[in-house]
Image 1 (cartoon, rainbow over the protein chains, first blue to last red):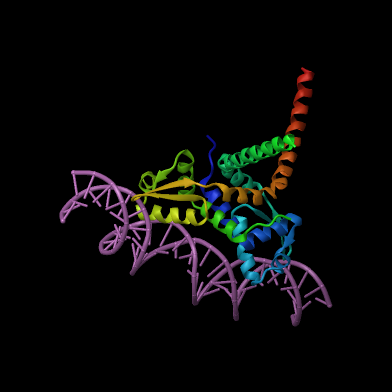
Image 2 (image 1 turned 135 degrees about the vertical axis):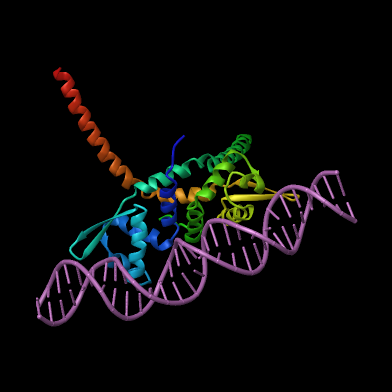
Length: 119
Length: 119
DNA sequence: TTTATATTCAACCATATGGTTGAATATAGT
DNA sequence: ACTATATTCAACCATATGGTTGAATATAAA
């Protein structure tokens, strides 16, 4: 059995549960950015974004590199890997449904083919 | 570009951010269960578990089937699929790192092989 | 009908979350 | 030295979260 660090998953899923933080991660997926640049597109104060960054940092989803007064943030996606691995245990539950659907589609297609053959 | 329903992701990740709720999902992965049975292993009141179930239900992660006074809960993993698809956009970031690590391991192994050859 | 069981509801509490504003701090530029 | 910029800190606020307890509701069983 795989062991999952409960607190790490709490923090990771918790960090991902906010749309602002997900958008920040999307920004960082394109390139590293400083706090001010990250904050610009968000309709909230710089301090609010700063707090979101601290949440992401505590979850290990971003890393901070100070260069003078400018803090450059970088995406660190490894905790997501853990989260995805956790979710993946439930994959069969939605794929099960997909299988049913695909079988249904296949049945339909077979019928249609037979009808085509009858032409 | 894929569209992600922000509120659905909020609810899904939010629901997954609690260890009790993750354990409940794990219970339901084995078999459907009623509220009382689900609550038994958790060190908290039945009402507390009942609330967690409502959170999971609102996130679409469980479905409830009433049969008389007994509510049977069933896992509904489809929202997780959305969540996983969202996370999957960041896969290259950790796989990138993994590649680096694997290259490093390969370099080590090559060295060791050379040493072995020297014996 | 009475009693027991399954579940939720309502009120409450402590703490967390997500936002604000104004002040503090640190570094850069002139 | 002075001024401007980047970022955080601190205090505050409203609402959400995760728990409790006791009462309410609905169904089952005696």
